[in-house]
Length: 94
Image (cartoon, rainbow, N blue to C red; front, top):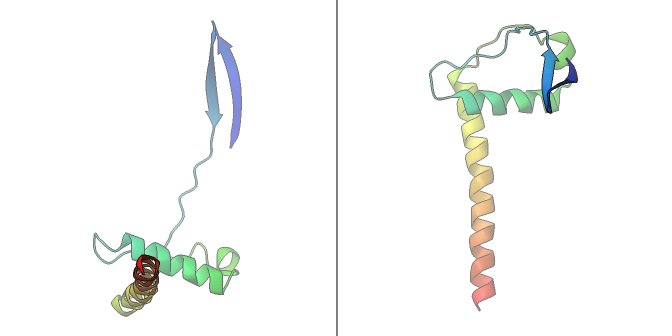
């Protein structure tokens, strides 16, 4: 993407020259799983960075089991943080 400014009167206008390329990405099976799909994809990228170069244009749909795994992992992580925060509040009050 290239960006440059032009002056019109006393205002500056931004002009963009963009090239949009649509790529295939993992799909969500319903209408409410997009966050879990993103988290699953980010986890896979962290575990295998070659996905960006090797399989980036491959269309893939996550199974319900794969999405459930992310839900459970996120829930356990968030519960741990919440428990630590609540314990911290209780200890501070004593």
